[in-house]
Image (cartoon, rainbow, N blue to C red; front, side, top):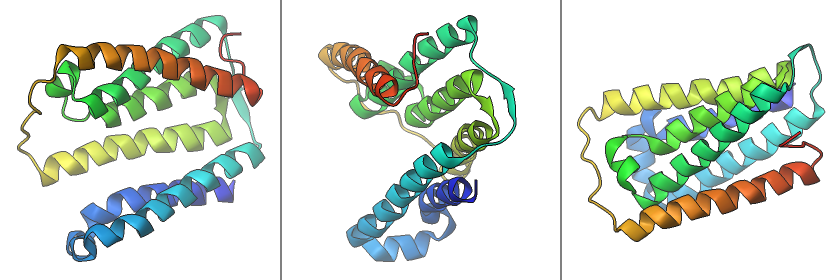
Length: 181
């Protein structure tokens, strides 16, 4: 469990570094991206290893209704990531579509994973996404939506979301985590 918590701590620290030490991060300039990326990558690797190694109490599990809700929320989560990257109409209405996608992703996983490791991982990432939104909004209260994107980007975002969802589902099946059953 300690490896999972360490990975989560690295993830949070890597993302909050810019907010906690803005002068230090600014002084690093573009060359600071590499070390931050390594910290984040290390965090992800430790979270995956820690999650797979963890055991503990089990409070709830998969149910046909929660599996269906999970799948719909996951598709929405992936679309929110696509909307953020492609600056679709939704991204012009929401300030933080990517962080909203993380929150939806974490909530979806908590619906079907009620063990301690899942509560730490997905609950921790949900808490991080909420805190990140609050910190960003306080640091930069004014927000200017991105300019309108061409309609083709809307279509690409939807199609890419469905394709990526299928790929993610296939990877989950390959790892032994059935998505639809």
